[in-house]
Length: 232
Image (tube, rainbow, N blue to C red; front, side, top):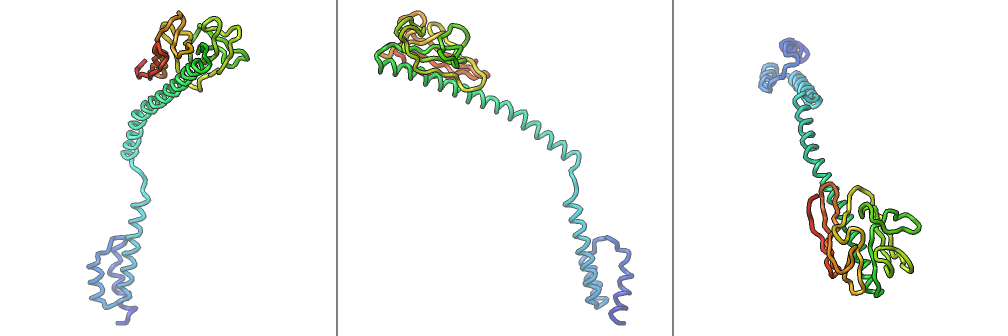
């Protein structure tokens, strides 16, 4: 029997395989029975094509409903835990930034009082963008503050007083309130000591609050500053 006849004979015996995966043992048996390398190669190609088709089906399949639900649940959990933490992080940064700006203003006022040998005051102002900003007794410190030499009425820009700096805090929400004698202004004497609204040496606290994050700027009678953490 020639090669063509052998191929025809054994192919007809394997028609029922269809897309069935061909076992390597079957291939070896075919080769031993037929002695035909041509038929053996044909069946190897058939098996390779079948494996390729099955691999393509495995790699191209979509996701199941269960997989989709699990993914959505994990994302919901991550959002539920991540968003509050991110908000707290942002509030802390904002509180720290406000505190640093306020402490910088107070330190500048104290150093200018010592350097110039005159009283220098830091007061809250409601109109920091005005051509001639003035001190105010209304509202909080978060709207802005004014640093000026204060040779006349304490806590008021008058006479020969000179404005040294006006500051409007950087954008964002938050509040700054002063307690007791420093609710409206802090006055530094030439020696660096501090006094407040009622006159005389005094200490007090300016409280910065942003979304529950608190920073207390504590001013001693000597004019020195320390910052404490808290909640509001």
